[in-house]
Image (tube, rainbow, N blue to C red; front, side):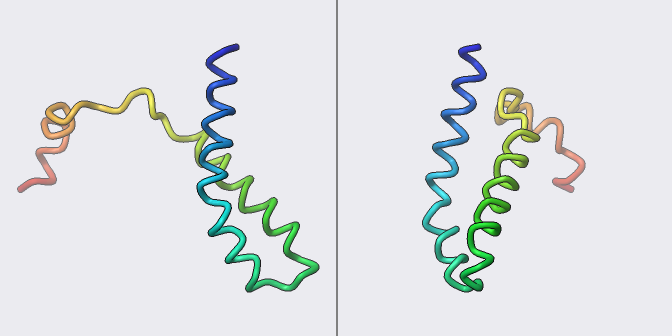
Amino acid sequence: MEKEQCNIEEIIEVLEMFEEKIQKILNQTIYKEQDDLAQEIRLKIIEKLNTLEFRDIPGFWNFIENNKSYQD
């Protein structure tokens, strides 16, 4: 349960980092649509964060070894 709580805290932190940008985008939108758009943007950010696997990030040398085909 602690791991899940940590993830929620991390998601909140990321959302707070994007909040200023979200507000700027909302200023370009019709007032009636702003709440829906803000909710949709936050939902997309959360969905993307849930699909990323941060725990299995390779080390530098493992990354280089696994991506040698792109170096040539």
